[in-house]
Image 1 (spheres, rainbow, N blue to C red):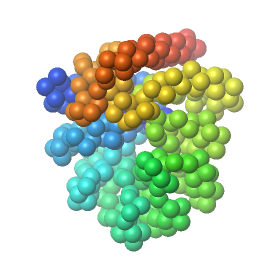
Image 2: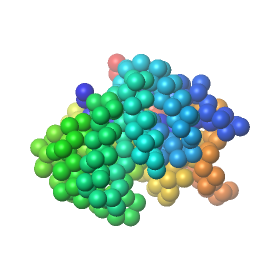
Image 3: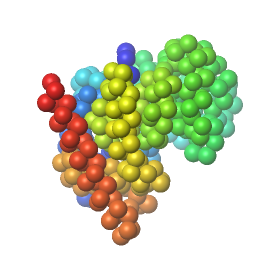
Length: 304
């Protein structure tokens, strides 16, 4: 199953009372498919998964899987502080029709325990296991450990790298596995152009998925110069949203409202809010994001 391209992380919509907004969630799923994405990732940290109860996460999986109806690959993050919850969510993801699961593996746990845990996940999971190599301030999992896990876990076929100095790590993993372990970039894909040059397989933004798809397709068509020009147009948005994950979550929920997909930008994370100055800057950049998406997505429609 190919997922090369753009795999957006789905924002989790809430009603004004803080409950799940399943109607808006369905709209987001259809929007994601319509933008030519190669897959979608649900219940990631950017989707505020840490604020959802287990029943809510299960409801999310059911609704998204049913609405998607296997049109594009669906990956569900099953990361949890409780290993048994991760295993249960992996099992339910397969039952409800997801094509894969994503699981964060800690570099603080010994390799043998990580392998044992992935083997338990593998027994019940769909065919794709995407390991999330996340380290906010360091280099994450050791390359030797990743290779050993890859050699022992058949379903471990995707690696999401979100660490410092990700570029050389992308290259090392692809070379050591001869491209068999697919790699993707997160962190709002600030390393997009460097990663494309390294042959990275997929990218996971939190919004503007149609615009990212445009950049990706232009690069893959051999038009690197235009892809680079498009990416440069995105930089003011990335500079603002990459200050902190909370800012990114709030910004892209505001964008979903302006796109007509969400009824409001409610965030359960109380730290995901703007002060007056951030709100002022966000409004300018939201208009920029909308104009970029409208201009280049409409251009694609005219070309069809």
